[in-house]
Length: 157
Image (cartoon, rainbow, N blue to C red; front, side, top):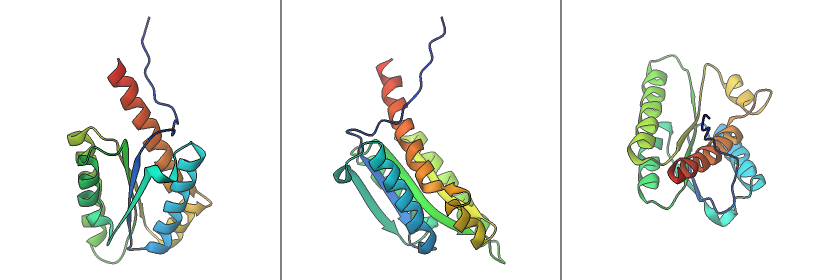
């Protein structure tokens, strides 16, 4: 018989860190609100959540790396918004951020969740931060809980 392992949305007793970028704060505040709401609904106590603000999405990997390496968190969530402009800055920031966050999860084993919007327009960012396209912060929080639980399931065998 095939053994299937999967995580569930269990928040009780989970400790979660969230790093949020202040750049495009009108978007990241909405993402943070969605993430916190999901964590609460899934049973994570407010006292088990740490929020760290960083200047922008480029700085998210540094903060998330420090948070993951403390060993105090079951998952780390990065929230930000990179909106395309007229220069190549968009590609540099979004690429660095995505690669850095992926490496943290692989290097530490702590689920590090990419809750960073990479959009073409401000309107698209607004849609993904709680209007037409849902709230990607809420989705990132659900992903963090599922991955934290999956890590526990895998370690248990």
